[in-house]
Length: 319
Image: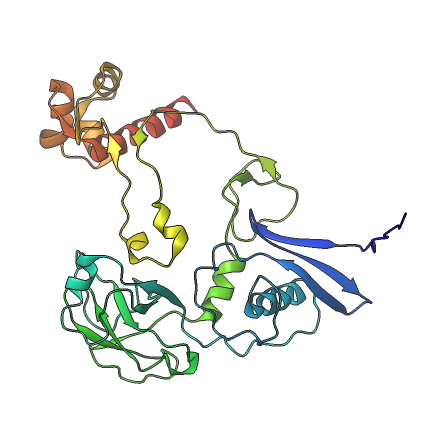
């Protein structure tokens, strides 16, 4: 009988939020070794650098480097800045549907099952052109495994066929209207470590923020209205990078777009007064509040917003 002895080692953990953590070892007083880094929330991005050919880990090398950098910062250890911080964030996609192929029109790279890259552009300040309020924008560019070439590549909006140039916001001076600025991995590092935990509460029972620290409390959920929806994902997403993941909308059953006010809401309006409800809630007295009183259907989203205001108002009055 042969005995096999496993090496026992002390592991430490550093957690930002649920599923966003890394296990590591301490080597002496000033060194650490990343053992098990998680890629939740960033694994969909195309790597900003290639792993070595002899890399045997399941997680790409850049994920190890990211956690090493974050951990050393948290532990006040000497750290090395990753070389890929200025690389733009990209997601690899595949042309698998006819409607996407048609939108790309005569673009020379638009072929069935071709790979594309989708730049992560901030909707607030990532566009140099004047983006209209309801304008739909989804930019894609030709696939290239050469990360250093991503800037200055041409991209196209699949909704209208217009073409733009990707540029580095830190280097571009006086950009033209045909330029977009993809978010880089340096920004990702900042946003990733400031991600608040949504499934737990702070030690004092309030909602978590980006700088929350300590042993968290369990959050208790109270079920409200039951809503019937279709399945969340399509199985084909598990088989490849499909652009339909970005256009997916949950199907909801048995839910009309308009709703009539409940008797409880009508009574509450009567007690507060129509004019005061209109003045303090911001909803129109004639075209909304009176419709609620008279049982005339209104938009569900507006009704839900008004009910939330009503609950907040009553809660404030009781205090």
